[in-house]
Amino acid sequence: MKSHDLLSIYQVSRHEFDLLASSKSRFVSVKTAAKQDAQRLYQFIDDYLCCSVNKLQLIEDLISRNGQSVFLFEKQEQLVGFYALQMLNDFGLKALLLGEFDGARPDKLYLANGHQQISGLYVWAYIAPGLAANGVRYVSYILQQEKFRHINLYARPVTDEGVRITLDFGFEPIKASSDGLYCYTRLVNRVRRFRQAA
Image (cartoon, rainbow, N blue to C red; front, side, top):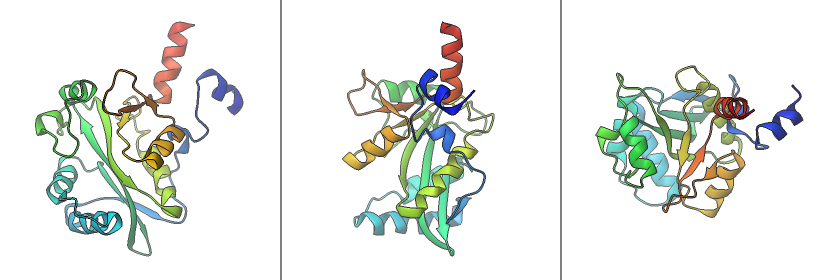
């Protein structure tokens, strides 16, 4: 099937998140964060946003709970960006959709541990200015793995620029949400939905 057919049939965005996938990241190297990276990431966020975010414990928890929750983008061993996810279990996804999930202070009962099925991927935060944005391609590639590829992503962008980028990636606002929640329906789920409706 030609790419323009895919765009029209499955309502694919021009910068569709699932179609960004690349096993190689140009301009930056990408790695999953380890426990010893928590302080460095905390400092990067603090410096970049020019304010204290008091998120060191949360960063440490994200990294320790799932080894593929936080991705670091580096250039010449310098941290230039990151992409962090909170992996929600079934209770967490329901709480998110009901407006009862606080990504800044998540109840651990809502976060999937190593033995639970992941029901939703919540984009906690990412910073990827300039060429660091190429790191997002590798994150997309990782999220094509069988254990992730059917799991929808959710985000609450808090700036106008964040909303624009979120929409560009193919996220759509959840109309019933009162707290600015957006959902990215994985392409494989849209294909399945289309076939069921046909």
